[in-house]
Each structure stands twice: as structure tokens, then as C-alpha cells.
Image 1 (cartoon, rainbow, N blue to C red):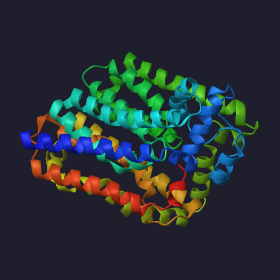
Image 2: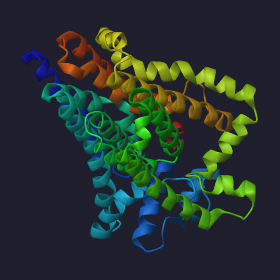
Image 3: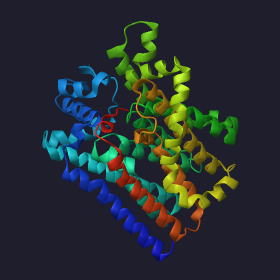
Image 4: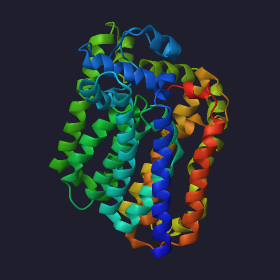
Length: 400
């Protein structure tokens, strides 16, 4: 990295952290004006009060419409509440207890991007990745300013992918991958199916490269056991609270979100509407994910030539899984919610793919040019500021 590029990256990094921080500090009650932000906060309050992951606040339920009912939560995953609860226990139900964990998660997403990239590809790569993630608008708007779980998703996804890449040379890291995937499973309702499907896809990918010996790898089975334990505990919790004893009820009750299960069933029952939603959402998702990377497209040539390499194919697989599943859920939710097809809210479903995209650009000490990265940072910053004007108050009430 040239000295000029290093200073550009440091400037972008600092600007990104400021953009993530200042709006929430100036308007600390913003998370309580959104369904997701208020719902997570209510879960944390009840967790500290000894009432478990429940909703007892009619205002929260009314604010979220049909997504919530009074009683135990069967839609919002517990990860954000687990993070916020210790701050409420120490500081009480205060503004600081609401804002501080959101800022720490926001900064933590940037730190994890820096640390994992630095560990895999070196310090220069880590700085560029941290700068890019700090400027990413869905992490600032949704994950920080209005209290959604997006930064927790980025943290758990990045750590899972890091452990998988490290496991290519040391199988023991598979256990960490299972642990982080389990944390990711609890980070957001729609991530539940992602980690199940991604786990199956990762198994097939590893089997193709490593052969049948994978089935004899104790570390792989240990990773499955770690993830399986977390999956089982949360599934049993849901079964104990929501299963009505019927076979059809069994299918819905164990899942991370009954709302999501109902939306999927409704969308699959209307294939023409689902096709319309998928077609309508595809352009905005592609543009939203790819726009910031446009000046850097030349940097992907080497990874395209080397797509058969195990590490490269794994990163492309991660990008594909994130995008396809995020696209599917964007289409599914549209069938029931009927929002504007060009509404940018759904871009957050595919944004974890930015991590493997950055790693494909930064791996193996590839030379980095100053102008493409500078243009990329400018586009990312512009997208963040544009999001403020594009997202009206009704859009901010979207649920995941």
C-alpha cells in the first residue's frame, strides 16, 4: 500500500466511525421509534427483570403491528437482547444503556473486519477492509442509528467465515466456526435458515475438495456438535412455548420466527407473486451491494481466474449463499408486505457479502491502487448520506 492510499484509508475509517456515532449521540431515542429497535430493547428489559424473552409492553406490540403479540417472543432473535441486557443491569433503563451497546456493536463490526482481515491477509488489507465496513450504510443506518441487529450479524458472520478460512490450514478452527455460526443463528431471525443452508453448502464444498475423509474428521463433527447444541437449545425453547402438539405445528414452532415461517408459506403458495417480488427486488439488491465496489472491479480478475482454488471458491460460495438467500427473503417479505419494489430496505439482507468480496480483493498481498479505492470510499460515503434522505419514516418501521 502506498503512503497516499494509507492516509486515504485512515481518513475513510475515521469518517465512517464518525458517521456511525454522531447521529445516534445526537438522537439517542431513535432506536425506540422503530419496531425492531424498540422490540429488542423490550426483550432486554424483560430479560433483566427476570421475565425472560417476552413482550409485556402494549406500545411495543402496537408499534410492530402483526409482527408481535404479548407474551414470549417468537420472532426476534435473542442476540441483540443478550448484548444489551448487561448494560441495563448495570446502568438501569437509561439512555446510556440503550446507546452504548449499539455503539459498541457498531464499532465492533468495524474492529472485527479489521482484525480478521489483518489476521488473514496482513495489516494493509485490514485497514482497507475496516475503512470500507465503517462506511457501509446499512450498518450505520439500520445497525446503529435505529437499533437493528445488522452489526451483530456482520460480527458473527465475519468471525464464522474467518474461522472457516483458517480451518483450511488448521482443522481445529472448525470448532470456532461452529461456535460463531451458532451465535449468528441467534443474531437475527432470518439468519436462522441461512446458517442451516450455509452449513449444508459448506459441507458439500468441503467434501468436494477434501473427499470422503471429511466424514472422519473429528474437528468437523465437533463443530457440528457445537452448532447443534445452540440450535437444539433454542429450538427446544421454542417447542416448549409454541408447539400445539400437531404435526403442522411442529414444523413452525421450532423455527426462529413464526412470522417468517408464515411469510415463506404464503409466498410459496403464490408462486407468480413470489416471482414478481424476486424480479423486482433483484436490481436494487445488485446495485446496493455492487455500487461501492464498481471502481474496484478490476481487482476481481485474479479471483475469477483462480476460482477453482479452495479458498477462492469458498469465498465465492459465501457471496452466492448470502446473496441468494437474502434475495429470496426480500421477495418473500414483499409478497406479504407489498412495499415498493425499489425500496432499499432489503439491501441489508445481502450486505454481509461485502466481507468475502473485500477478502477476494485483498487476499495474497495483491497490489492496491489509490484511485479505485478512493472512488470506492467516496461512493460508500455518498450512499450513507443518500440513505438518510431516501428512507422516510414509514420505511424505517420495516421489520426483518
